[in-house]
Image (cartoon, rainbow, N blue to C red):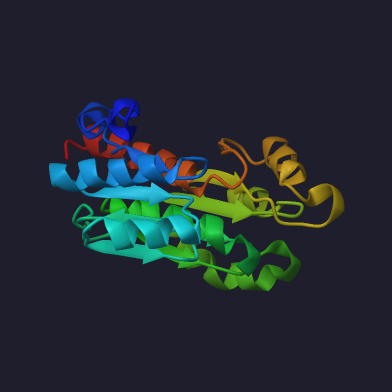
Length: 225
């Protein structure tokens, strides 16, 4: 069998649900990733690759003709052209600390690939609450807010009590002892007393961005756009 025998890319997904297929690179053999990239390039469509190791990224860029847009922080790469950016920025990605940067940037890159501008609000964790309050009005102007936090993950509850936007919470695997691995953050977010805050899986910035995109697409349909 060849790598192509194991691959069937879903180029109809964007038409079906409004979200393009993306490629989760973790645990995929390099020959499969190379074949996926070649098929995507041949189709003329842009494709987002997530959770790339440095070795995978180097091999893809070296062996598959671009253009490539790679980001080491988020461990993502875009092959070909993303969707054109909309004029307005409708999503804020709010991160508790710089240790949450990988997950926050994964969300930002996913939104950008889909053509949605986003505002990055970083290092506003509840241990220094004044930092969040300084950015509160900026956050409030966005109809959708993604909140990324590890440790005790109190930030989504605080933001959820101050901001009326649609919220999506993402626990990260940042922390010491029982917090390490993100389960404490996940349980904290699931136990939040803030109303109506959906919670993604641990470190799933991509999933949070897709949830935000679904909300925005639904709003666009209601508005007849």
